Image (cartoon, rainbow, N blue to C red):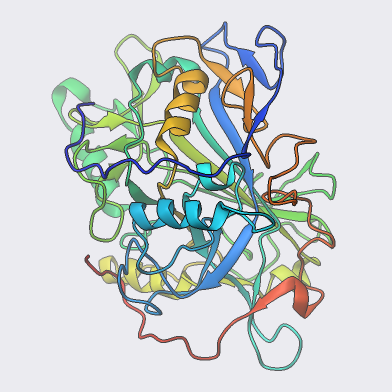
Length: 435
């Protein structure tokens, strides 16, 4: 991809102590394993994060308009708000990270090195404690990957540009992906490409239930994943098998095809597209991008929520559900309502320190043309890891945050483990807004 002229200037990190010195043998399977079979392994950088805050802002769809979005829960940059920019996120991360015992301005491993903002619709439990008030269910753990799977795809990948921001998961302007599916159908209608391309999903993989140890999947009535907290008939998708104190996980794959020009677009979607499954003429199957679009390392995220069984999660809904239903019905008036939780999506706003961003893209994804690695535990090389994602390394602000195991875990049993929502946000809610 050519250099993007509109990239904002780099703002280096000034805080120290958020990179740990480690020792990892790339020739031993594990945290920094060097990939020797690109067709059978994934090149990845894996990191972890904690909950940060809740508000009614969205600096992608409603920039400069505080209180006009549906409720969002944020992780990563603790300062993300309606006025956030790459410069503000980097600058505030530096300011808040200096000095002890101040906490870093990020709840993700690396502190000020990763001032990226991530957010998603609040998961709301109405009348949670019989007082008529609504509460948001706090996300207990977040795992973030930047990945090329299989690693052979990394050969065509380009670097993540500074200042990029986008949304992935259910498209709030076209929840059924009607427009994108039509483009694929048009391509498949050409004589030379008949049936070649297949829709690869909107990026929201759905909800999955795990046992308490996170070691086994509890299948839903239709498979591992289910689009919402209930079936279309309002029943339990797990048939009573997803019991109290198990985990519900929301899983996402970001669009990885970039137009190479725009760091933002109205609504947050149009400058990126999902990869499509390409059944190429040789018979092999790859995930490809349209001509003139550029592959980026694919961001994937998993959000983990504790619950008390269907009597609990069966009452939950996403703050974006009603808006998504209206958008779907605007395209097709006969479109049924979204199931509770089906409108899930995640927003991403780049706030990485450019030096660290370049380092893990080169080492883990192999964008420098060198070896690729499976980077777990927030490793960015065989000798360095981001603090907060590597076991046993203390943060310079005297905490193990970002990423500590919550004690007690966030759940829906007590007010202090949830977030009470304001009765009347600033509003009114809007669907798009420009800069």
